Image (cartoon, rainbow, N blue to C red):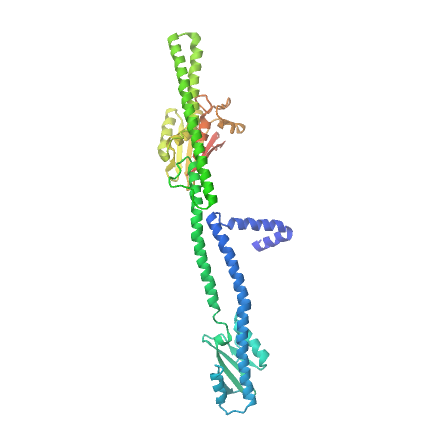
Length: 460
């Protein structure tokens, strides 16, 4: 079934559905950028206005002027016919041809004959042919033949009289508004100038918005904001840029305060734990204190894990990281644990990330897979906009109902597998925090290998 038949069927059965389909198709064809849409907002009304003005001009002004000029030329020809029929002349009609040439600017000749040439084919669009023919029919009412399609600037008209043929040559601009293109050229030229001015003006207005978007994107990826960024442009854009700067400063202050507070807490708690360890060391090998010693070690491990999670490596700068070097380290780790590790890189090997944090992100997922599975496969797909890393294993996996909960801090699975070797339940929470600080995410799903698939997706 053709597209036309499909549209007709939709219009017959459900006009509303057909209109929605057309609206969706049109929405897909429209540009998505603000710059392109702004240009369309300016250019489309201008084109429509020019089309309406040109149509009205062609329909009214051009046709009216051409009609009056053709009426005047036809009136002159009718006057010449009246002179020929009213006043006897010599056989060469020299006086009539002189008057027509000097007073009416027409080249006239009277030739013997009783037939006209065969009619010429009508042009597809020639307003002069149509209007001049109508005027000859209305004013002269005699058989005629005209030629308005020739390459010359003359229009030829032949009128059949009693036993002769009147042959008249007139300049085309006598019967036709030939300077109409000047108006169109001026209109199109002025529109092009206005469009160029609009493009230059829009570029100046869009540039601050693009700079704001780039700054927000860099901040969302955990990168430093461009040093040249400053609120510019229209008042609304300046207000948005200033609001973004203030928001960034508040977030950075909050992170600094959190880091400072955690540093103080870490110092105080470590001091207390050191005292505990010292007292346990002075107590000697007392079997009654073995449980307490184990609790102190667990507290030390939990404290370090929590501080590492809360700190989030926010102070690290963005740099280059080679995925092949990272995967080589995982291969050595798998060899130490007698595990099978394979990897594959599709695209550029180098990525722009926070190297230590990103290595820890991938390392947490790969280490967990190596701990609970015998075979691990890692794939990296580096595209123009996104970097996607999938970690597949053949381990016991994670139940689907628990895949959201494992990202919560201190959440531990009691069944199948435990995702944090330290027992604090911060492995996936740290991984998710690092991925989101890069502007991405971590998701869990079923692996084709039968275990768990962990997918990392961050902007490239």
